[in-house]
Amino acid sequence: MPDPMSVASGICAAGALLSSWQLRRRAVRAEAEIGHLQAELAAERHAASHDPLTGLPNRRAFYRLAATLLTDAAGEPLIAVVLDLDDFKQINDRYGHAAGDQVLISVADRLAGFAGDNLVARLGGDEFAGLLSTPTVDRRWIEHATRRLSETVAAPIRLNGCSVRVTASVGLAPVTGPAQLTDALSRADAAMYQAKSLGGARSPRQLIDSVRLVER
View 1: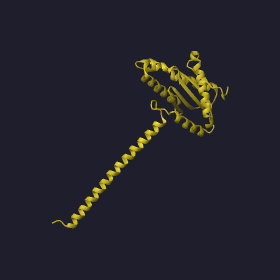
View 2: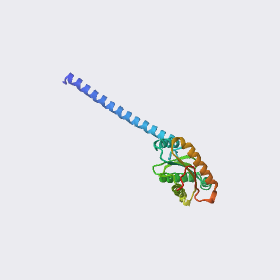
View 3: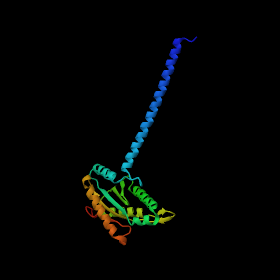
View 4: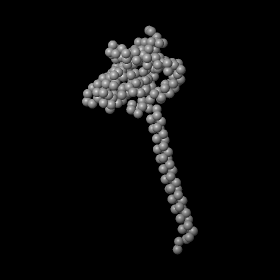
């Protein structure tokens, strides 16, 4: 006949083992739930600060990130860039909004590739902005960079079995501190609209804000 004490001891050991197993299962479930919640929170934060179509930072994130970059730049020159696609409505009208979305994605990818580690964002619609580091505010250097940016955007885009080109009007202005960001973007925006008003007179369209540029 089994020893009652041994039986009781075995039951206690089994109970302890079961309890330990249940605790581990609860810990695993809790850890998985925490991981899931953290992933959801990260996704929500990303969605709140990024454009859902292109994946670039949105307008709110651009101003926040630009202010941080300017604070950390220690007075080094940066260039505020505003870029707007020309006659973009014709893309939507001719090829459809899905095709228009693909054009915006392609332009965003090209801007990100052009900017490298610099900040670029989609402000809304077909308008983009950037804050680019520059070794100088020399006019010739900036003209060269602006021309390259315009040509990058204007390269052919494959769309629905055909090749289309979109041009962009570009405006830019130097900025050296957080307090100047809004003013620089306003000057770059005004330059961009002046470039757009030139129509086909310059291709690709570009205009450089002349304020604070050094002639060399």
